[in-house]
Amino acid sequence: LLDCISTKYKFAHDQIQSAAYNLIPENERGLWHLQIGNKIWTSKGAEQEKVLFMAVVQLNLGTMFIKEKEQKIELARLNLRSGESAISSVSYPLAASYLKAGIKLLDEKCWKEHYDLTLKLYECYAEAEYCNGKFEDMEKALDQIFAH
Image (cartoon, rainbow, N blue to C red):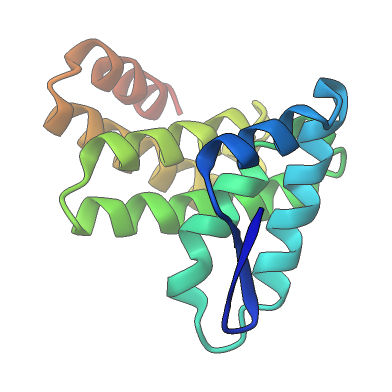
């Protein structure tokens, strides 16, 4: 069922992984993702950039379990870093998904309390959607920027 590779384990087949995942009740999956993302990010050491995407994907899957505003802001920052990195790698659809996830973590007060972060998320999102040819989404992001 599992293959041991060095000190890491991986499922021998995708269907085994899927079956194991389906054993977790749906209403608990997000919490598991949040815990996994936190473990990945807190044990990153000097390999921040290597684990950034992996940790952020897991954390984003658990956002419904994040209650504290500062944790949401920190995850929005990580989504911004991931989005900027994806833009620099010319992976615009991936960048847009990270940036949109970061924006969803913000509330209306963020324009006042975390202006620079909020502005940068919307700017990068508009850029990514422009490059994706999604001009309506780009315009909505720009409208938010101009409104604040």
